[in-house]
Image (cartoon, rainbow over all chains, first blue to last red; front, top):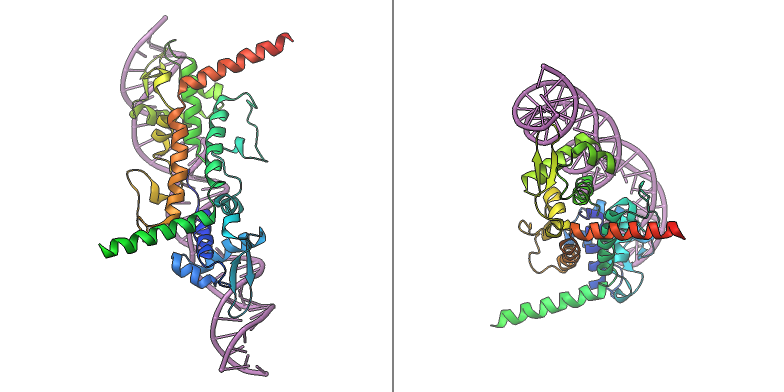
Amino acid sequence: MKLSTKGRYGLKAMFELSLHFGKGPLPLKDIAEKQNISEHYLEQLIATLRKDGLVNSVRGAQGGYLLSSEPKDITVGDVIRSLEGNIAPADCVIEGEAIDCDKGEFCVTRGVWKKIRDSVNQVIDTVTLQDMVDEQEEIDKNKSYMFYI
Amino acid sequence: MKLSTKGRYGLKAMFELSLHFGKGPLPLKDIAEKQNISEHYLEQLIATLRKDGLVNSVRGAQGGYLLSSEPKDITVGDVIRSLEGNIAPADCVIEGEAIDCDKGEFCVTRGVWKKIRDSVNQVIDTVTLQDMVDEQEEIDKNKSYMFYI
DNA sequence: CGAATCCCTACTATACCACTTGGATTTATG
DNA sequence: CATAAATCCAAGTGGTATAGTAGGGATTCG
C-alpha cells in the first residue's frame, strides 16, 4: 500500500518548484540536490509531468522547469495521478479502468476498497501545492521563534 | 498504492468466515473455492492470521477455520495489518517504525503522507466484518426484491 | 485404517522498481 | 562562434517482492 518513488519524488520536485514559483526556471540539478534525488532518474519523472502539462521546460543554459499554473491550482492528486495513474487499493476499483472480478457490482469486499480509494482521493484532491508552501512558511516562522527563546 | 493479494485475499477469506460464523469450522478448500483463490497460497495467508490470533483452526477431518471473535469485533484494519503490516504511503510515516529522512520532523511532504495514512486508517479501523455481512444481506434482499418485479 | 484436513519448509518464475549509461539537441553567455 | 549549461531521449540492469507451486508431515473423525 505504498506509493512508489515516482509519486513521492514527483511531489517533492513539484513542491520545490512551488517554493521557486515566480522566480524563473529552476534547473533539474537544483531540485535533485535540494531533495536529494538522483538527477537522471528525476529527469524521467519530470518528463511525465511535462507531458501531462503540469510543468513547462526551458531548454538551454539558464533553463530549467517551471510550474505551468499557480501552486494554488495544482493539487497533490494532480501530481500523483500523473506519475502513478489513478490510485486504488485494488484493480477492481480503479476509476475509468476498473476490471470487474467475477462477482461484479455485488461484491462487498469491493465496497471496502471503494471506501479506501475515495478516502485517499478526498485527501489528495484537497491539498494543493500552495497549502504545502504555506505550511513550510509556518514551520520556518516557528523555527526562527524557537531560535530567539 | 495497491494492496497486495495478501490483504485482498485475506479479507475475502475473513469475510467468508464471517458469513459462516457460528456454524462450526469452515475448511480452507471451501473458502478458496468460494472466493476463487489458490488453496495452497491462501493457506500461507491464513497461517499468518492464525498466528496473529484472528482465526482458530481445527485439525483433522471435518476441521477447518473459525473466527476467533465475533465479526463485530474484528475490523478490516485488523485483517490488513496482520497480513501487510502497518499501512502507509511512505516509509517515513509507518507507525511504530518510521524511518526518518534527512528532513526529519520538519518535512511538508511528510505531512501529506501522514494525512493519507490517517485517512486510510480511519476507514479500515471503522469497518468491521459484521458491517460487511450486513451489507451482503442488504444486497441479497435487493436481489430477491428485483426478482419479484 | 484411511480420508480429510491443517501444518511447515522450501523453491521459482515473473514483473516491477529504481535507477544507470550514453548520448543528442537546444540556447544563453563571453 | 565556441563553450558550457541545460533539457531531451532511448536503452540497459541489478535487486527485490509478488504470487504463487511443490512436496511432504501431522492430526483427527468416521
